[in-house]
Image (cartoon, rainbow, N blue to C red; front, side):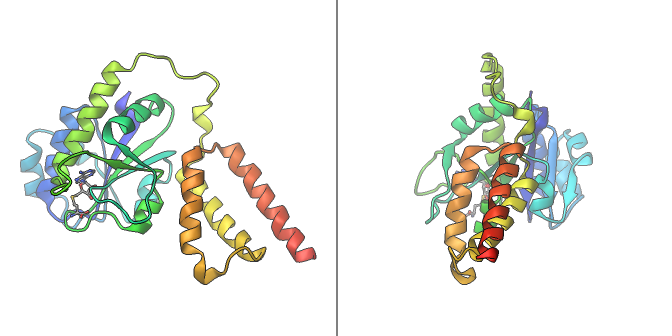
Amino acid sequence: MLGKIRIVLVETSHPGNIGGVARAMKNMKLDRLYLVSPKIFPSADATSRASGADEILAAARVCDSLQEAIADCTLVFGASARDRTLSWPTLTVRDCAQMIVLNADFTNVAIVFGRENSGLTNQELDLCHFLLRIPCNPDFSSLNLATAVQVVGYELFVAGEKQQEPCDPETNHETLATSEQMEMFYQHLHQALIDVGFMHPDKSKSIMRRLRRIYNRSQLDSKEVDILRGILRMSQGNKCNE
Ligand code: SAH
């Protein structure tokens, strides 16, 4: 069940943390590790901290960008210790785990973790459907990277064990839009809203962020994205013909 879940680490500075993450993953039966531009990898420190989870390090996929690491995912969570000014839809790790185990047989799921010193950027969070928060001391809320992966892995493991109810047969999980399809849709939406005069290119950032929130919450499937893009094309055409 946990096989389609990938752990994505963005620009990790300390290779020891990558090893600690591999160990935490193996403890919790997760095995897909993606590394976006790690500072040092492979490394003896990583292998030593992995304490026997070497096969996870050996199979780790190194990517140049977060987009590349999540391109074929339909459900993407960004783990964040910080409260953001413009709130993305945020769930506790336990609620995320429940949502993930309901979907993980059908779709590729990514859980993205940020840099040790600065976490994830707003642009990276824009690529996520939900923010994942590990509840803890509000005055000291930043966990070590490997510890954060450990807590997430534990919740997934427990939720996976408890998961018994069959999924809703009405939902066709296999056709949920991928991250890549959603990015193309957002680019199209952005252009169309400018073309029809709804927004100015210089002032589009916060509107687009809010629109992403709406659509990401909806978990659109491929056909729905096609319909929306058809509407956008028609609106753009009509504007040009006026
Ligand atoms: N100093 C960074 C936090 C780095 S901790 C900051 O201010 O954002 C490294 C990563 O571990 C974070 O980017 C996040 O993905 C994860 N993490 C740490 N604590 C977390 C928490 N309480 N909830 C969710 N993710 C957390």
